[in-house]
Length: 309
Image 1: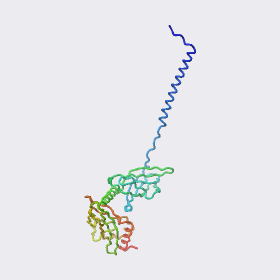
Image 2: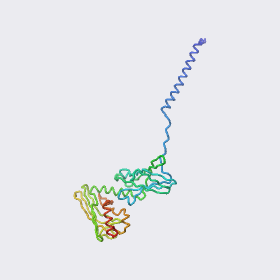
Image 3: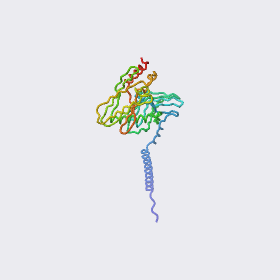
Image 4: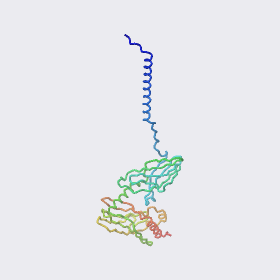
């Protein structure tokens, strides 16, 4: 027997329930889409590529003779491109130093013309002797445009191979300080034909033993009594851990050459290489007489050679 037919009112109520159910499902779908879209957010922006040097521009690091005494170096920028570039801040990052080497004259910009080259002087910090001698350096350049600037990081080839020897020498001097410190502490000029006296003071530090083997002549100064073939003035001064008193040694100096240009253009004539032995290790480090004594020595050379004022 078939079920009784529903009344018109019942059929209308069923239709309304179906419509309301479909609307609820649609609303739920839309709400779910909004939540998902809200969590995902806008697509991430594509990062700008890492700034690089213009094609044809290269960088290297070098140390000139005039840079040795003040412990400076040059960041050399060569522009092989067709357009000029402007370099402002310069920094050398090298694990062989205890901090970055930065531009000596800060807040200055250098323009490198097409086909040109600029040397930008940087001040070298103290060495870090925990790093190996053959570590590598990087240079960070700030390139300045008309309305913006960008930092570029590039390897820094050592054009003259000075960084590894500098690190080795200064770390040897640092280790040598466990036994003694060395300094030039006086200078007595002499009349022409007689040797002057350069005073070297060796001060024990009481923490080790070492031997000061001798000093090497410079391109401007030699030692009285040595032959043309002898480059080392022997000292053979041994410092023991029990020593407490400084030892003062007089070094007899003569001009190595009487050339006015050697004095006027002097860069390294008063920087001596000191040969030492310490902890079973032999090596050399450089010792500068200082700016004040350098002036006195150069004046003496001019007077001794007969071209002084």
